[in-house]
Length: 184
Image (cartoon, rainbow, N blue to C red; front, top):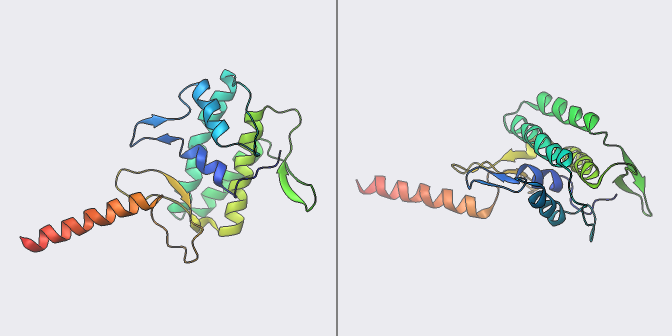
């Protein structure tokens, strides 16, 4: 299957499917995991099949390993990030192929389940993001209490927050703190 998502987007969706600061987890059960996969399809209109307990376990187990790649990259442990991502690619038999005209990179698995193919596509996409942008562009949000991950595709490469909301909240809190300190 060909993914229509930008490189790294599926991997980001997977690691950010658990938001510890909000206490939410999109992979809490098979029904929620299927809804999650439907919201992040491999291709436009692709519909995931009902998940087996094994497929749910696959998603839940691979998520912290993918997060480990982002954290290692953020902490400038690039060798560890590369080793971890390569291990994940090998473990999940991610076999990219060129398909179509013009040729596009695709993760083709004729015998694998939708979920297995989705995980492989997410890992290949993350590897593409690393190739395109570099490991120093993988990060985790600098906002207090936020643990969301991101791929920095900005021209300057200086992104620190997962969203503008986190950036605004952090900057507003810093301004309030400076204003309060100055008045005392």
